[in-house]
Image (cartoon, rainbow, N blue to C red):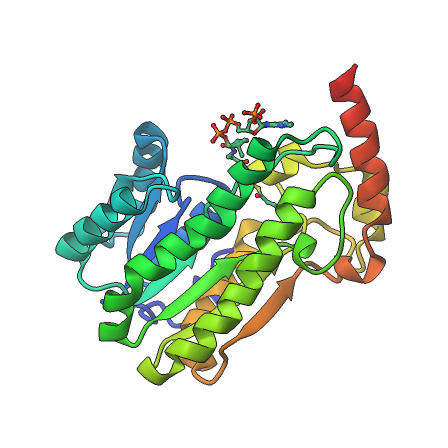
Length: 272
Ligand code: HXC
């Protein structure tokens, strides 16, 4: 259910939100919730057709939308995307660093390049976005939201690359909150739990027992994350900075054992 059920519909009217990786999944869900609350939204990703389809979904809310292709690993392309967004929508008020990559891999079989690919997209990509958005965010006294993962603080099997990247993101978030607070810039991370229908869930194990074991006994929805994002970026959270906000139905309380067993099965299936 979109956040308009709970928040004032003009909460982000006249504000600009930029979402990296906004063409699909959780990030598109976050983008939709901001657009539903009146924000002008820019999204970037690697594939223009995917972005165009996402932009069509976002335009339903009647605000200005900018869809521009840029790989977060390419800081020059990202900076050009930020300039285009600024020219079309005005200076950025909210940056959502959502672009990520993931796959299951045994640490002993993961190549250095495979590890690097995920660190480059998730961690370096989030830094590139953060660094590139600084002047705009300084101007608006804006907010940064990082999309992290439970792998950042709890080891999950076959996720050595993701754990390293996401832990790096959360520490970067805290450094940014510390250094840029003087400019009125807030930074926080959101840790989504298992979210239904996303690319991440296709790449990771999901079993019925896993869902039943979640304290709230259901998968999350992209709107569950969208409403946390809206709250954290809004004046309701004006004094919240440097925090990791976990939105997972209590799933982290279980540890990662069920995930690890499901991942073992899934990998065995892939290995044949
Ligand atoms: C082992 C793999 C692999 C796999 C790729 N590699 N897939 N190794 N198992 N399944 C290795 C390759 O062999 C190569 O190393 C290196 O990674 C780079 O691969 P490329 O395909 O050239 O990289 P690239 O095209 O940049 O693709 C990046 C990617 C890809 C991460 C590998 O999967 C991708 O683009 N994903 C984006 C979409 C995505 O993952 N969405 C899910 C996000 S969910 P060598 O040594 O052979 O050169 C998410 C949530 C995390 O992140 C937390 C969940 C709770």
